[in-house]
Image (cartoon, rainbow, N blue to C red):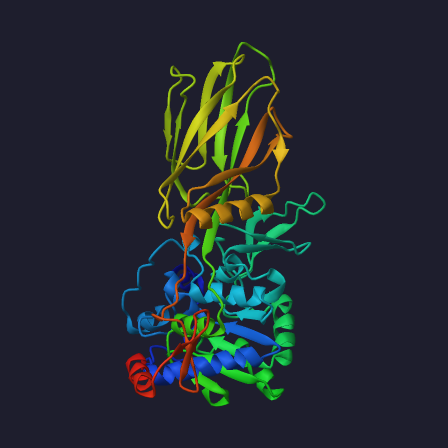
Length: 467
């Protein structure tokens, strides 16, 4: 994760201020600032979010400049923190999902991110409404046609180097490169041009969890200020742009955004992670009595790509008890057996998940039929994933699995089937204990709750307790 990214970066002595003390607004001041920010958002016509590492610390990704940040510890000669989970399993946090909800509602017009963790894309922010200024550890781009590929594994290199993979477009086949910048790399125009455009259009820019020290990215929010827009900074440490802010909030980003969403009466959606695999079956075309076949469980990104969320595979044959079972631990997961060709049967597969998944395994029956009577289908990836997400939310569980498509292999006898699996489900609750209260002529009006008349004395006691 950011640990690996820091190690891959070329050496640079001047990385700005690190390890500064964190500041926290008192509770009653913080609440007033949350309400003020919510009103700014209600009045905004073109809202832009500008995000940094501070929005991902709650997702298990260490920051860089905080008291225990990576660069802070490096400068102090201390041991780097251990990641809470594998980078590829990090999931969008409360702030990511809140921003996705505001975008869906038409309130948030654009997101500019300095993060390379890919969590905004995972949260549901459309690619055309997102500028990833410093790249994305899970995104590759074709050097010839510009086509982008979002992976479920971390791309091995940084500095826009060739990754060894090629564009899947048959008319192209160009070499793929990573998209993560090193220190001396210029910001890509594809990200910078729309970012500048939306900053100039913005009447409100909210900077979330960023020290605003890395140039030239840190100067983008000022383009809004020059045009008469408001700048809001939410960060635990001081930034060089604090004097330009119309509102400065020192608090954890998740806590602030939870309060804002509550005030605005918007729910923070759950995050449902859906991962995909491919199961392929190949066998000889020559029709002998016995068929020597191969089964392979691999990534949808190609046979050489990692399948990081699966730790092992168990295969058994309930229809053919004489066929030897298998326990596969090495990737790519491959199984080879020889069985009678005339009778179709099923292989029972148990996929055991690694760290970071909310369920331990999933099971599926894979049909094997050598009589060319296999059913081919294509249900549509988007439709299948949406259905799985809805099922996961309804049941509040993960582990749901559904086939997306089954097709015949083009280069040999056999089939491949693509599956989608719900591997994690994360709900984000408001961090406050009660819905936001609006005070109007001695009446507390709770959004979504019937108004309650209270005496002035009780109201004062209540406000004192809440502060």
